[in-house]
Length: 130
Image (tube, rainbow, N blue to C red):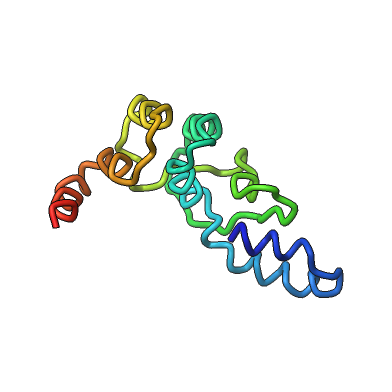
């Protein structure tokens, strides 16, 4: 999605008026839950992750399309992090201290992220043995 919004910024004004609403309607991948998972594997975004994890959401979490900022310079800026942010379901049961430990690790690898989630741990071990 980041690549799409960057390309969109170079469009002419009349084309942007037609393209922006389409990107906004299809912004499912820019949902905060999806971006948080992507950010956990990005080595330069530890502060953003911890700040986003600190926002608590109560009640049911509705999947609502976020408002996309088309002038964003990075995928972390595509949405307003002060709006209704909720933990991704896959990370909901992981304590904040484990997220912080993961965020400060030197080597960010997918297996270490998946190791945090107990439901995927056994499945991951099987996949790595193959």
